[in-house]
Length: 630
Image (cartoon, rainbow, N blue to C red; front, side, top):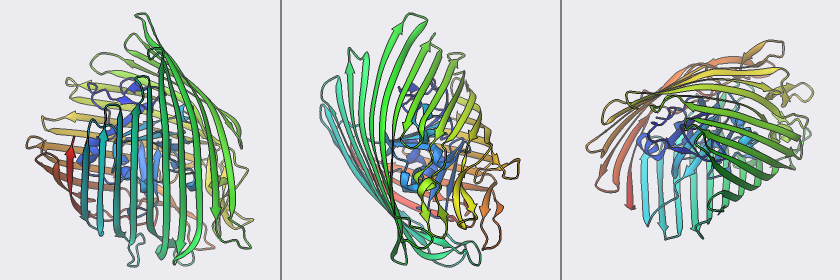
């Protein structure tokens, strides 16, 4: 169940909560791990929909599948969450440093790690509130192939195939998936459906040159196109049918070399990554503007580990050097109000260190420090301290962490220009955050039941508001908000083995996220639900050939903003709470053949994540998976 800790006896290794791998019971912060088994049980197509069940994570989607999707952690902004895909930082500088969640399907995803809390000391600016680490399917022991095809509501057809092979010292894999959906209507009026297409192509290779030297290569290409509706600024202020299309191409490449020296005492990793995005918008078949960005990253990490006596079981130091070069461009039609055509660039060099101590077989202490030298914003320090202590061998432990992070203003916030809507502010300052958390994990009934409870608080200085009305230009702009924004809350989770074939998982999150008001005092931040909950019930039977999964997610009331037609002022509106119920079932015939089906939004809930933007109703889907080899 997403949102809950894994059983202690499994103790999976987490690679994104530290510079060195830690087991889940050693991590001082809050981590949720979603494995491939859960993805297949729930049959979720988009990764963002999986995250709706994770404690502390809220998801906002502006309409049907393929529409802009934002993921927030503990009341943060969506560009405060770093997304890694096989080690590549995938946030898009051409989309306000947000990750394009609407483009990420579960096609080749093996594992997802969601690390909540300040991670800037480890991973830099975009990790102010957390990290989502996507690990794709790679390692194989021999030739294998698989494929699937499914269809269903909203004219949806989804299919894909992959193949892997391996030798004594090498592995290789390739895969592709295509999703085509006629979609549903984003606006509440009219009859035009807003469709979506997504082509994802992946490839990877690995080579063990020697026992001490390994190479890894990876690539991912996504070509996505989605229809969307315009907003009627003259009569209703709400979405209305329009012939608008967004076409996005994304490319992620990585090359990694790992070198172990002196009998594994000194471990080195050299990594080169490249990310490229092109976002083109069209209105009535004609180009209406575009943004593009590419990021070249050069990374070195070296670590040494010591073993010292019975008390201090192990301690290690990791040092890292990173350099990133970002280039941004925008194209569009110039007018008397401004010219969007521009090219910008920025580079950042970072130096990081982490010290990890494992003591008395129960205590783990971590400390991290990072120094960023940015070409545009000068110097920034980030730090984090954490500790985890097991009270007993039966799964009881306490954990805590505290840290400081920062988020650099985006190219869009500083330089973006969208006619009749937005103009950037080049004088923005970085946002700065200080946060802490304390948690307790407890195993009961010989590990058959596990519960977790976490309390967190965060203070954000110089928060950037990207929707400030500028009376000089009559456009919106971005500004640093004076005062302090506050975020606090609680996360609770439970997993339980109710029988030999029946498993339950659940989570609840309370989040209080406020920002300063211009006239004094504080107000709730937009699109942050105070209450969220999730439950997952899974039943496997017929010698585990058959499986039925019931997933329920609840999103509480939250505020949004409505911009009525000029000259009326904007107003805060309340979005109703909603509950989504999904039912999935599958049956495996022999080795490698499986039929499956699901019902999404089973009770046809009418809901909005963004005011005025309608989400799809009930949908039914069925498919077939076939696998050969391993």
